[in-house]
Length: 91
Image (cartoon, rainbow, N blue to C red; front, top):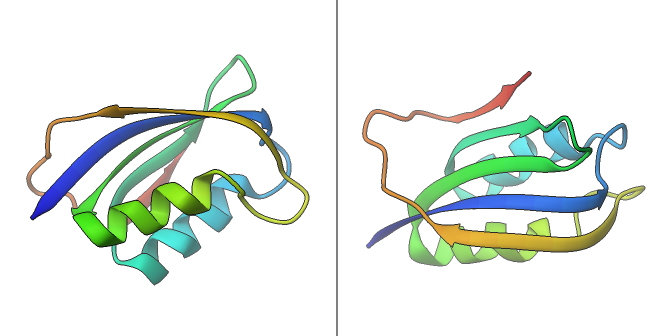
């Protein structure tokens, strides 16, 4: 079963390679979607894929890469978007 979520990660998550590390993790777990910085200093994501893979990616977001400090993660169900291939780093 495919599941999808929007995610907002707060803390020290910009300037610590959070987006690039997210893309690496997404490829490793087999999920698709996108990640981008938000003006308020947080990072936003859309992730979707097989439920077990999405769960693994969600667990990763709570820790992030070395150098990051995750203070909070907000997760909300999202619509599965057709036609997404890969995991895109957005500006």
